[in-house]
Length: 182
Image 1 (cartoon, rainbow, N blue to C red):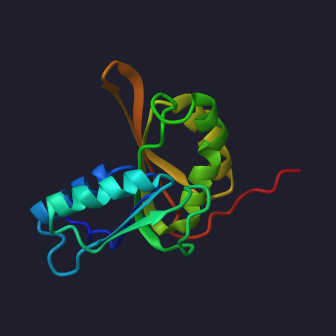
Image 2 (cartoon, rainbow, N blue to C red):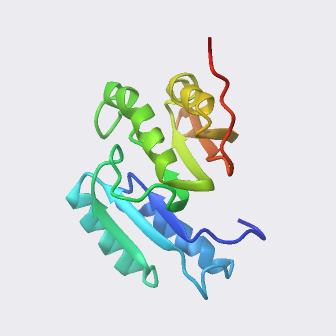
């Protein structure tokens, strides 16, 4: 995050127990970027039990406000368009939660919805082992429509999952001219 302005609104659209949101709050606090105007943290998850654990984690960590937990779907986020500065997401990999087929079927819908709520210039950080799905099926149509641009990707080993990747995507600040195909 360096010398940049801290994000005002941070969303984890599949927050589970809130790990990424709490970690981001800690980073912002440690760097002195969250003292005068704390970033609003928003966690969305389909599972009420996970959101209850998120609140327990928020209370344990302390000083994590403002923080909102919303029971909802990443496919239909209850947020205004262009309202989020930063999205952090670790979608299910089809290992412990749901199936790989479910993830493959829904990944593009999820990311398109994340693009809708991102502000122009906003970024999403996405961690997944579904790199082929993300690179071949999710990003190309969104890039062709001018909705998202891939800024960076980093491959790393996650407990033997050597195909694990972290992607940074950005919503263009200005509308992108999309060529009309004949």
